Length: 259
Image (cartoon, rainbow, N blue to C red; front, side, top):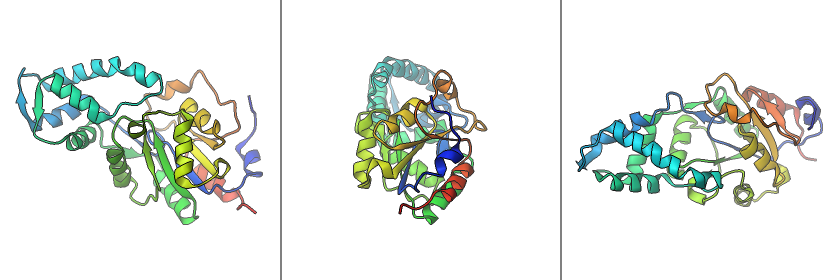
């Protein structure tokens, strides 16, 4: 276990050329998250419901179905929302009048429209102003297009060069190949990049495994149903630990440009 202060690390660090971010509870969060609200919104577009199912019945079945495929996620594999929705509605003999991409957009928006994490917009403005490149890697079943739309809607000033949704790339963090893919997209060495995320296993241990410097972001002011996942483990690698994006701004002010 490493014991040190953020200040002690910063004094010997160079400014990163790029910072890559996690999505959920890092850049944005989803207050009021409720799958039933998503199904209720989609029922406005049902043109055939052979079995007369209600939104609640569909939502309940959907949760049971998701539990059945959970083993794949535990193995580090991701399922795409369009695959899930296609099977769900065809199996239940429900026909929608809209395409799967449109159904996904409507469903997710009504599950939760999303909200920015405190001061995430200020942090994005700061790194943009200071010439630090940026990108996103997210463990998520929703499509890359839907994720990009959500991020651009809530953080319109971002300059993310790529947004990698695990749904589009088979694997989930902490699989090192996702981080290696990001480095290839950026054309950078791992030592020039930082990764910020709230999950110790997926984000901290995942990024450091390929040589990217990890920043553990833990904002306890926002409700997070997955916060308990970090209770039993602590990072055993050098990392920065911050609780507010304003802390990252102050840290970046203290690091020096690479000689």
